[in-house]
Length: 361
Image 1 (cartoon, one colour):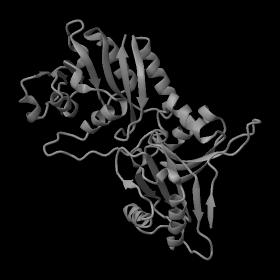
Image 2 (tube, helix red, strand yellow; image 1 turned 90 degrees about the horizontal axis):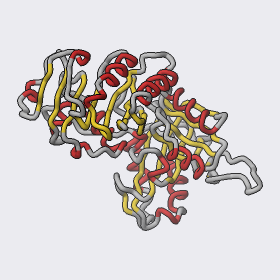
Image 3 (cartoon, helix red, strand yellow; image 1 turned 60 degrees about the vertical axis):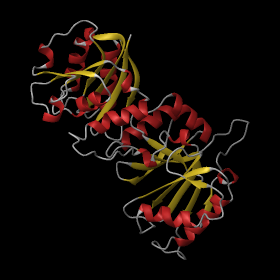
Image 4 (cartoon, helix red, strand yellow; image 1 turned 60 degrees about the horizontal axis):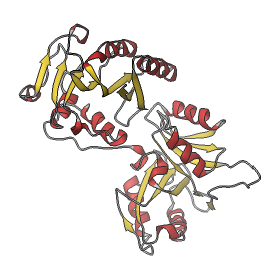
């Protein structure tokens, strides 16, 4: 059974719009992404597609209204979404596991959309563990792409004009066509993946690589950085690669490859016992597995060493059972200490934490 969904329903007289979205968050944080949507759009109706991670939500707002609102006030925990404009539900005549007819109908739906003809399009496919499509997500993409030979389009991975998003769930396939900017992320499900490099010290480096991409930070523009709680040196190695002088503060040892860099100064001390010159650094970073309130206190006590206009990148560990209240408290602490929050985001490479991007004023 095919059900093409109107992109927006309602009238100019003020009737409510109802749109549906497939939403994604880091594993275990979907309830907080749902709460963010509730606070922004009012009551929401949702169904979990992947426990704790992916959910289908109905919002009382039009597609463009939702996209514009989320661009203006980007959520912390919701990392990706796409508007559902087409749905196929397996019926008795198409038993679960036989979704070929669903793909044929989806292909007809896509071929009928004039926006895709002659455009650069990315096809992003995902699935739940028990899905109507029994193959892999990659096989789903291949099967759909093979049916789109009638579209004079360039299939790309990055820099697409339009993204075709497909999610295969239990007994149904959901799909939509959206501009990349309307999905919060142009990566499939918002999962930004980097290839581990030979000799890479730790996966912590991926957090700064992702922050660089998501926050639009040009790390090569900084001159001198301090890394608080640096061991074993994942963030320090990244900053050194970007050409900075780096002071790494940690009583623990750093990786030997990092120690060989002539632009590194390693202070084997606790951060609360070090002294710097006033305005010595234009970048301060901190990724410590520590109590978030103590981390905030430590960072604010070292802000004298950061130049006005300098940048601070700090991860906040969400140890509390009420992370949204904790984030509000921590951000208020930083803002009271002359740090302006530019972005607060749970990146794909964050685990039980978020990343704050701040500028000292």
